[in-house]
Amino acid sequence: MTKMAAADAGPSADGDEEEDDDPFKITDDMTEEEKMNIRYARIAAEQKAAREAEMRAMVSAAKKNVVEEASTVAQVDANEPMWVKQQKYAFAGWVNSILAEVGLHVQRDISKAFDDGLFLIPLAELLTEDYCAPHVKRPKFRIQKIQNVDLAMQLFRKHGFRGSYSNENLVDGNRELVLGFIFTLFVEFVGGDKSSRSKSDDILKWVQDHVNDKPQYDGVHVGDLSGSFKDGRAFGALLNALDNEYLDYGSAISADGHVANHEAAYDAAHNVLGVPKLLQAADMTAPDSDPDDKAVKMYLMLIRAAHAKRVADATARDSFAASLRDRLEAMDTGDLWRLYDGLCNHDGDCPECQCDLTPYFVFTRYPSKASTIKPLVEL
Image 1 (cartoon, one colour):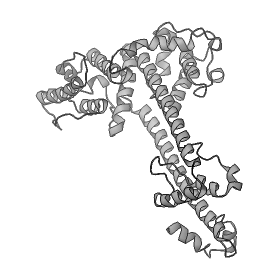
Image 2 (image 1 turned 45 degrees about the horizontal axis):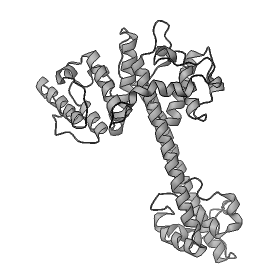
Image 3 (image 1 turned 90 degrees about the horizontal axis):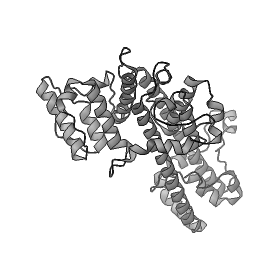
Image 4 (image 1 turned 180 degrees about the horizontal axis):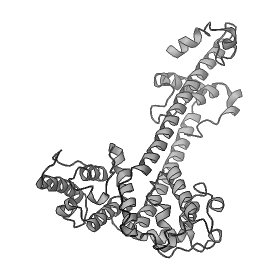
């Protein structure tokens, strides 16, 4: 009501030039219908500007997080074997992507991160979507740290975790055991089908079905989850095969640009699918070693899950839009305006789906302007 009153009051007396530039100016010679059209057009423009400002803020925050993640990833010892370095980087990236939901970030050696349970407990709660029993907030003694770790492990086992890892090994930071523990967590709670726990094993075949023996991916043949991904072309081919809008294989991937291939694929997976950058191009292309199969497997499984979710969301969105369009098209103009009047208290948003319906109603009332928009297409 405030917005409409402001529109009725007409332009401010700040100057004739400013008045002439106001696209929503209401004058006395306008009909009531024209005035109403301008009022709703003003509301639609204000809502659009607010949404655009919110989107810019979200994009800016996302870019800042990417930069911070790259600079504060969990510490990795450069003298460790390459497979350890790759696993630590990848596993820390995945753990941090989960903990980010509650504002936490591991910045130290991931194999030591669970030594007091304070990172493991929120990780367990997020993965299981359940809650741990009360824990020691500031554990100082070893027994307190073991108790905290045990609370997290109890929660994992309550939800079907089958790994046999001792609380003491996690507290002591046994490198190999902790890395194995993290990978097992990922496979059981994220990468596979929780009912069968077996879907992770078909990731190699899934990739092969998409990229092997395809003429558009000349020279790409995936035979394993290690050396086949060394030059980065397999990652690019997979993303392109899933959807050519994810990555333009012809322009982004080349036979000799190994580092660039990896970076292009990681950027595409992150920007389009939201997959965290778990791998480093320099490590993957190191001349004296091959990519670690567990790190590659984790990354591929995240790509598969993100792609499946994107497809499912698009299907659900199209189905809902079609249903809503059918419902609205079955209503006459009078019914639509009565519905719109009932939505005014929601600032033009449909209370069911939070979609801005203002343009639809405005241009349904004025069919001559219908060609300027596509009602409901973007719902």
